[in-house]
Amino acid sequence: MAALPLLLAGVLLVGFLWPATRAMPLAWLSALGVGYVAWDMPTNWLFAGSIVGVMTAVEILWIVFGALLLLYTLMEAGAFDRINEGFAAVSDDRRVQIVLIAFFLATFIEGAAGFGTPAAVVAPLMLGLGFPALAAVIAAIIGHIIAVTYGAVGTPIVVGIRDPLSAAGFGEAIQAGGFTVTEYSNQVAAWAATYHALVGFVMPLFAVAMVVYFFGEDRSLKPAWEVAPLCLFAGISFAVPYWLSAWFVTAEFPSLIGSMVGGAIVTSVVRAGYLLPESHWDFPPREEWPDHWVGTIEPGQNGGSKTAATDGGTATASEMSLLKAWSPYVILVVLLVVTRAVDPVSAFINRSWFVVSWDRILGTTLGNSIAWMNVPGFWLIVSAVLAIPIFGMSSEKVSSAWGETARKIVAPFIALIFVIAMVQVMLNSGAHPGAPEAGSMIVVLATITADFLGPIYPFFAALIGALGAAMAGSNTVSNITFGGFQFEAAQQLGLPTQIIVGAQAVGGAIGNLVAVHNVVAAVATVGIVGQEGRVMRYNLIPLTYYALGVGVLGMLFSYVLFSGLF
Image 1 (cartoon, rainbow, N blue to C red):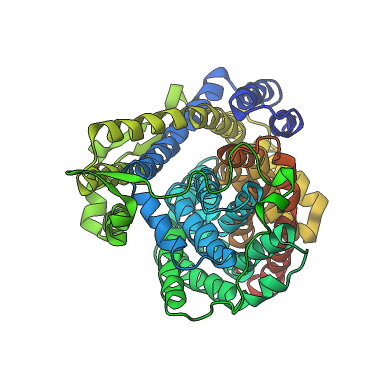
Image 2: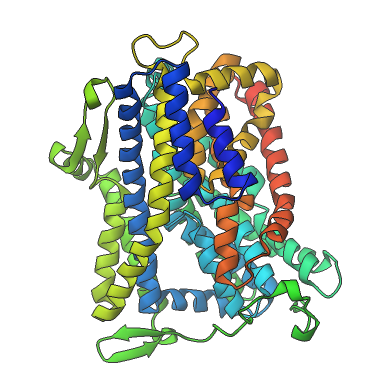
């Protein structure tokens, strides 16, 4: 009975390929039914738990709206085309372009916007440069995976890990371990970065190898080995500031800092002529491409300079300085650092008049709050508004950016509200008076899974997170659904919870390699709708590598190196 809502969601999403907007309302209703029948939850507790979920969903959507608004503002202004030109102009070798665009640009977009945006934005850019549509999608999806754990300014950690573990008895266990919930979630983020740094620094080489092997004139990895020094240097240049940020700054910045610092280092090195391959690699002639490589949009047909609004009319994106193009994101990082690192500012924006709260919802002990000015979405919107005078945007372009953002937010709004409401009902099914001694639905599922897997549980922890992301198409939703599950299973087995929940955060990222929703969105942007299955089959290769690597590290961390952690 406890598994029914998750099984129903999985069958509808993966088995019948229903969109989340249709599947998740039914999964939520099934959670209400199970809670009422099997967990004796009073009606007010069922709906109070759902309201907690709705408030959490609104907080996430506040971030998503701001992230998309800033992205579309830069796209309308031509700034995004200038950023892409800056990368593309470094080299016309396809392997180098994969490193700079499919890795660094995609990881940056993931850190700034998340929620499937990187592949949907980067794949068309690569198509415009002359990549086959299928190759562009595969490179873009693989390239950004290392950043997904911290997508949309830390949302998968802040909302996906911290908020669920603040409720339903987990908070007390965490405090007993010597942490506040916020400190604990930051530790989880740091351990997730450790997994990623050790396993994921090879992803630039992985993305290049996938493209040159499957889309070259002859199936050979030799062209990939020729750029291995550049790829590994790129991976390390990203991983070091990424890892340091996760451990010593906050969970909101690793992907942003890793991509900005690493991208600047690698671009400078390549511009200076170092680490470039001796040979030049490109795709076979266009007339030799198989039909499934391309779709309704021809490679290169959406390339060329776009125009950006200025006070004097229009100017090509090439005439805009790179510093100006990047400036709204620089402003965003500064605003986020100041509002989190400067104590008087942080205290001010968290005052009660900037917080929407609801305590004792419907007469229960449940409650939730939204510090709307502290949520990154507010500062994303501020950065988007400041971008208007920076680029001298016309009212038509501003209206277009806001309108596109509003249209894109509708489907996530519906899906997130119901999936998080479902999870909150499951989490709080053991909190009401007269609840079964077995605990909540999540506790029951975790207990059974821990008993079944026993000592080898750490090896499979990331795969559980990957399953959640593959079903729901979101690392954040996977963390919300399975974060408490993994925490409880770790406690049942006496394993270090930070290591296990950290593996969950990594698994939620790698599941995006085969998440139906993300793949559908990506292939649609390059005109190859219908090739989703082919993309997912290719992406099973990096998924297998990542899952095995994290599984081995999970066992090593849990039993040998860090067994004494909470």
